[in-house]
Image 1 (cartoon, rainbow, N blue to C red):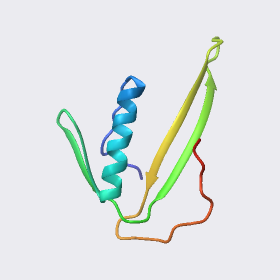
Image 2 (cartoon, one colour):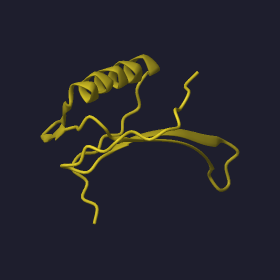
Image 3 (spheres, rainbow, N blue to C red):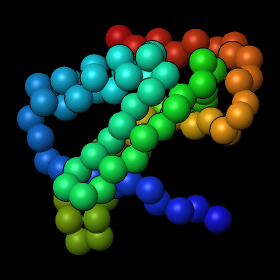
Image 4 (tube, rainbow, N blue to C red):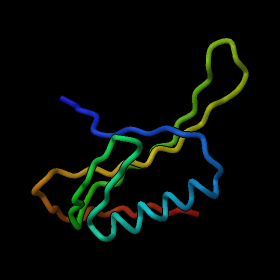
Length: 93
């Protein structure tokens, strides 16, 4: 069963998004991150090995000619586990 602990969706300039992603990257590397917005707040302890999922989707709304694209970045781990990295490096260019 899934329980959403924190969710945020905002339209931002790419420079702002880049700054947020850099800060998230630094916090992931440190192993601790706290996300907060208004009264919502969640603290996460991140193990040394986690699963990285990257997904690109495109969607056309019925009756519209515009194409919506999305890039999803998901980090997953099980509490108390620190597994081994798997082969298959993703290249970002």
